[in-house]
Structures are given as C-alpha cells and as structure tokens.
Length: 217
Image (tube, rainbow, N blue to C red; front, top):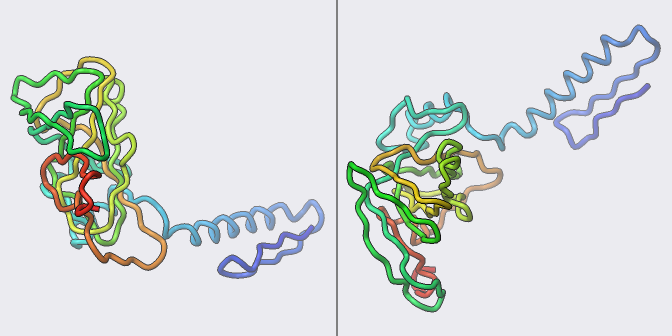
C-alpha cells in the first residue's frame, strides 16, 4: 500500500506499507500527515484568548479599556455604550435618514421590535495586523436580540468605537455598559495593504448609513 502526500505540501512524504504488521507505521504516517496539514493552515487561524492578550501587550491589537476577565477561549467580550440612535424613517440609499438620539439610563431602556437601533462599543477596538469580526453573544441572542447581522467583518486599521446594528424580535430591556457581544481576531493571508481608512472606521459614535453621500464612499 502506498500513501503519497502531494507536492503541494511543505514536503513530499511517500511511504510504502505492506502486511498486517505495519499498523504502527500507518498511524505514524497519519500523525505526520495531519501535522503537515496543520502547519500549512496554521497562519489563517482565529486567535485564542492567550494570543489575544499577548498581542494586546505587544501593541498589535488595541482593546481599550482592556479587562482580562472579558477574555473567552477565542474571543473578547465587548460592552454597549450608553448612547443609541434610532432610525425613524424608511430606508432609502438616496436620502439622508432621520434619526432620534436615545440615552440608556441606569434603570435601562426598552427596545421595541420592528425598529432599527445603532449603538457603539464602549471599547476602542482595532488592529493593523489582525482582522476583527464583531458578533453577538449566545446569551443575548436567546433574549431575542440580533446584533451585527450583516456587517460583522471589520477592516484592518486604526482602533475606534464600532457602530453596532441592533434589532430585537420582542421587547427587551438593555442597560448601559452591559456585555453585548464578542470580537474575534483573525490572521489574514497575503500582503497587508492599508491605504485609506473607511469613513465609518473613523467614527466613535453611532453613525447611520451614509450611502447617499458620495464623499463618504
């Protein structure tokens, strides 16, 4: 029996086996095969908690304020800032949207279904080395909140407070500075070319769509 790992891998491994006494050799080959495969794709993986903390200390990732208690196995928990804006009118990419500013007080604020709210993270988050992805939390989702449904992927670049798209399927009371979502960090493959920071990545308050404004594209 011949096992041949293609030349596309970091090295060519070709082993010949015959007979029932070669089980140990086959197991050794499988171990080598998966180790080789792991090494090839290792540079495209999500960062673990220890790596996130390490890269924050190195300055390659910005999370400010940073609290080690917010680290999860492969993510970091971010919090909801007290200021929200509510989108009031029909969405139209050709028109500036009407909005209403809301403040989440200590007693909480009830969000209503069939409405769109925009908030921001308490934390300044960003990296020029690792790609950020902001998503919701299982605990919050089970209360009926949808967070970052269509725009979870961040750009490489300077840190800022991220605008959060928020919808609820039933009335839900939220509180200022509550844990609301989690951010993950991914190592990109290929050359990093940061030419210009996108308009939204320069804002530190909830910011509605500027699709109607050609200057922000």
